[in-house]
Image 1 (cartoon, rainbow, N blue to C red):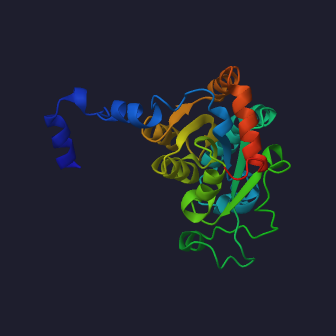
Image 2 (cartoon, helix red, strand yellow):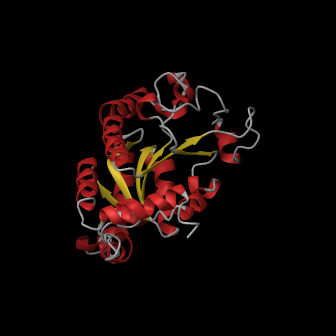
Amino acid sequence: MDDEKSLLEDLDPRYIDIDPLRETYREAITEYENRFKPPVAVYTALMLIDMQYLDAARGYGLFSHPEQSGVPLEAQEYYFRSLEEIVIPNMQRLLTAFRARNIEVIHTRIQSLTKNGRDRSPGHKRLNVHAAPGSKEAEFLPEVAPLDDEIIINKTASGVFTATNLNYVLTNMQIKHLYMTGVYTNECVSTAVRDASDLGYFVTLISDACTTVTHELQQSTLFTLRDRYARVISTHEALREIDEVFKHPDAAVELKNYENLRSGNNNGQ
């Protein structure tokens, strides 16, 4: 610590707390000039990450015994209040808007292939994280549960891209733009954002539609991801953006073309 303090004292304070490559990343990755060439919304998906009883409901799963969860009670209160008062209502607004425009909605959750969870990742086994098929822990919260034919991706690791066939599915549907929401921001959400960016997707993280167990972790994760791996915008900004995209004169044609793709009426082209 003394060596680090000495090092900081020797450096110009104007350059200690800046990200010198942020502008480069913004231009090349998150604000690439062609990423918003209208209309892009028809090649877009809204992702809800791990909104299930295992990790997003009071008194269930990881929080079935609050005092034994490993998360201080104050942190639990922050987490659940942010979920109940901010995140879930914003997710509902996003779901309403995306569904009304027939934009793809994808739900990910933690769920093993087997009842005893023998197929889980080593990390989930060590952490004792398990949601068996048909269990309460594997159920989605009813406020933001999948509807009709919406896609569900099950995983047994933090990273949904590395642990599932999600990239294959998105590629089949020609989806390039991902709006991400869910829990925990600093774990499964962050991993999904980083992996998606590395795979070439244009990622937008909705800052008030994701949360984690402390305000510090929430803000530090958003700071790290912003303009490196994703745009970080609010629910209000996302809704306004989608609305504007669908006002573009070419949107109706693109939407019809994409509907043919979704239904298989384009003979696989």
